[in-house]
Image 1: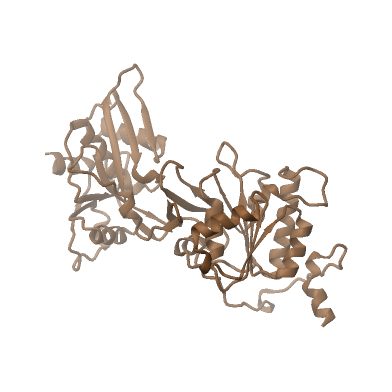
Image 2: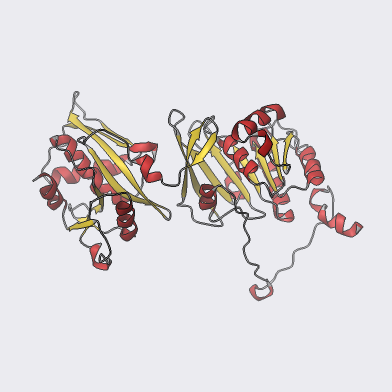
Length: 423
């Protein structure tokens, strides 16, 4: 019994005898089935690749006040059957309790949720030994300090040392650990870059503090895809999962407006329909402005050049403003067609029906290029009540439209789309 207890706590003993790892062939390694901790938060499960992997070290970053601590506290409170230790170095235990009661009524709080207000890693590991949690959340890694170093908390050396100690604990005890991290004014995670290399998963919590919606994005994931996103709505009672994000990305408006179109994009495995808003007006000064919000600046310049060279529109003397509704950033080239139609709609003051959406990439020759997984985009548009979708004729070859109720129109060139819409 004593030997078992010693081996269990070997990770925390200073000067303990190191285990000597022996090289093995792939045939000698037994492959265990992957068991994940499934959180009640479906958006978090999607972003992590299907749930929380035991023994993984996860880092979540974001701007101050964006909701990182709220998200982590909400996840901890929702895991009622799992013993969770919430370590905070930024708030008192009374402050955490106040937020917890706002998120969850007092009578529904689980007895498996423990709060520790501590910044010394040695004391944290002593508390871990006492509680034996199945999940540890540290808020934040920049507030911790290790007695192994003399530098101040938050320094590069301290962040590296504390993260290394937590990583060793996570791997040797098979306990998942969440680290909340600060970011710099450039939007990068504060601390050494090696911190992002050490952890298994890096999550970015994005959004405008003046808007209600938040996006949880993966920038690194050893156990799943890095293209998934989770969408939340910030309420007074915490964060609400948004199961159908297309509804929030399509703004509610009275009647039809010029310069507004709907593009079908895909984030990870999830198809989204997003509204693109454009404003094109004569330049007031010598140099026209090009101001995209949520879209790549260089790609916007390329599309404007295609409209001028291939389609004959004089956009070189116009101010151009582009906005992706909902505060989301889109990198999918499939919204090129929707953006070009939006620009010309604003320039010519001709509205486009709100029952039409678009999914095609624009080439430098003005041709419509095929995009991947167009069948999912069509299915999402049909589910949301759209009547028509414009795609490239090269995407239509592999489609089975026998059971599709939405009208699918295919074109080869951008000029053909303008002829169909604007005459």
